[in-house]
Amino acid sequence: MNEAALLDSVRDGLLIGGHWRPAADGATVDVHDPATGRVIKTVASAGIPDGLAALDAACDAADAWAATSSRTRAEILRRTFDLLMLRSEQFALLMTLEMGKPLAEARGEVVYGGEFLRWFSEIAAHVPGRYGANPEGTGRMIVTQHPVGPCYLITPWNFPLAMATRKIAPALAAGCTVVIKPAALAPLTTTYLAQLLEEAGLPPGVVNVVTTGDPGPMSQAVIADSRLRKLSFTGSTPVGRHLLAQAATGVLRTSMELGGNAPFVVFDDADLDKAVDGALLAKFRNIGQACTAANRFLVQRSVAKDFTRRLTQRVRELRVGRGTEPGVTIGPLIDDKAIAKVEQLVGDAIGRGASVHTGGTRIDGPGTFFAPTVLADVPSGSALLREEIFGPVIGIVSFDDEDEAVALANDTEYGLVSYVYTESMARGQRMIERLRTGMMGLNVGAVSNAAAPFGGWQLSGLGREGGDEGIHEYLQTKYTLTPNPFA
Ligand code: NAP
Image (cartoon, rainbow, N blue to C red):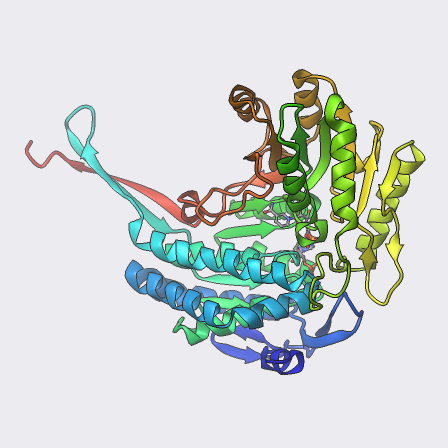
């Protein structure tokens, strides 16, 4: 399918109660290809009445969906996975068009994002309960799990498919209905996924999609509605904090997958070839626009020059361009704001004395491109070391010993993921215990996996997505006591 035919086959309305329709006030929002700056589609922009109508639909469908057998829910998820695999090229191209990642990476996201559908189809029928005698012997304790109820899911633009399936699949597996609000910058993949769920036989109202260019008022109204029972958000820490405050009124169950500031630590006993491979993966996947992107490269002084030289050589080989072109490994950043932020962080580090080994500047348009960059000797105090870069920039800092590496790595209020390269098993084990992050890559540069509990410590969030843990974010526990039947 060519680009135009693919974009034509994506609905441009809101999905509410099984009907595709425009926003109540007719508002729309344009979606751009960041590689060209051109508008590729215009979609409905939901307002407060649309958000509440979507919640009505999720509430109307809730009891019937909760009452379906877990096997039925599992089979719908599995069918959606099978359909996604059949349409993997369309989904990959759509992601490349709406947010710019190279096609090869978009194909990788179809596999990763699809895996949440398959994983939770397998988990759906395996939710455990407990039955046992109380310690006094006077009764029997029964512990059961129940869907939390209607959920509001808010996702970011950087992984348009995986962030949606990572929430929708466990919610559906648990028996919850949802309203999902994708990011305005890349909403098309979520809409296309909803079309796939319909095709797989999902009943109307179980998944409702509200695209919008003005998320604040609508979200506030949905979150304030006492029928909503769960808010799951992936995005920046400031917005997450703001939404958590809103969720406090209704004492909502919340999952917050927020920002990161991942350290990438290379010890002098590391295999440097593997560390360079890992660094490229941890930094440049998604053009550096990942919450798990390595943000600070901490390298032991005795190997820092060698590591920087090898890494710079590889970074110079990366090919920048539109993600649909063969051989391109670095696409555009999402928009001008992202370019301005990266420029400001790089300028600040250089102004403080960091040395530029390659890159360091934006690339002339059309499109929002930034040259893959390596900066060494980044001085402490640089904003680059404190803030999420969200762009293709490596900043290297040297350290002398393990204690200093740990102190530098933990010197952040975030705690999503860390990467450590060492050939010493004992040192690796010490780092597992000493680094304050919810996830760690030990001699690997990418950790995400549908079967693993993804999530952060500290300001990186609350709760876990994926793994056995993921479904429990959408379940609530009931304990029942009955008398000892033999008494
Ligand atoms: P963002 O600005 O926080 O937006 C995330 C989502 O929240 C979007 O759908 C956005 O809608 C919506 N939003 C913004 N303001 C809102 C409000 N007042 N009320 C309700 N919704 C609102 O983040 P982003 O720039 O899209 O994504 C990048 C951030 O996400 C980074 O910090 C990254 O680390 C984080 N992230 C974390 C994970 C993780 O799993 N921990 C994964 C991926 C990304 P609009 O698009 O319409 O603004």
